[in-house]
Length: 289
Image 1: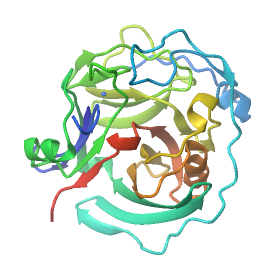
Image 2 (image 1 turned 60 degrees about the horizontal axis):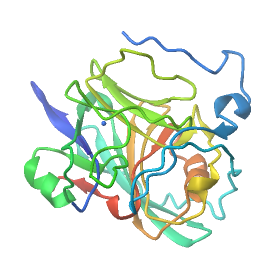
Image 3 (image 1 turned 135 degrees about the horizontal axis):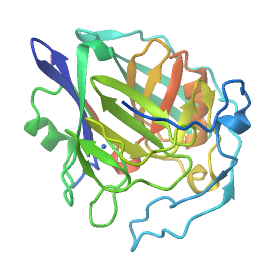
């Protein structure tokens, strides 16, 4: 599953793609956050329930978990914002940033997209994995391609997906999950703790994954089942100006706690951020200019 972005002409021509993995998703909302609440306890669940992190060594365990969160640490260094943005298409730019975390130096590639100049699509081929080069060959008009969500041992997506209004998979039950959704041309990221899925919801494009990394500008705590290991990372986020940010580590690895701490201190003015599948699935491609 991948996300593509296409550029607007007379019709949509710029696409961002989410794919299930490399090497080889009028709305009624019920909120868990009161309008007057500003406390982190209301912003995020204090205990995570639902299906745990996918495993690739056998059948997926869906017995559920109930573990306390690990606090988010302060970043060890300030982010490097020296490179600046480089435009590569109308309403689209990229830059490289970095920080030093508990596992060493990390370099990140950040793409910023004005959604008024782009159309977002989620691509998914059940039971099949594709490399970033294969997606690029199949979708030559895509300006940006990034990997998407988790997948199981049969290469089927874990979580809810909508691709061109067609639904695939089933909702993850994790309370720290989130949804990237596109409806009527509007793209947003949604915390499913704050805005749970409702029966009968439908989207043009959507991808569910976990965990939510930031919600309403606040850094999320990380559950212990996700907190321990350092890996390559990929993220989709929105900033307070309404831009969509696609972020992938270019060099180095980091824990999710280090990543969240950097996102909060990065100066990117992030409002919402959702983790995508990382590790060997991490991939981001820009169209050649």
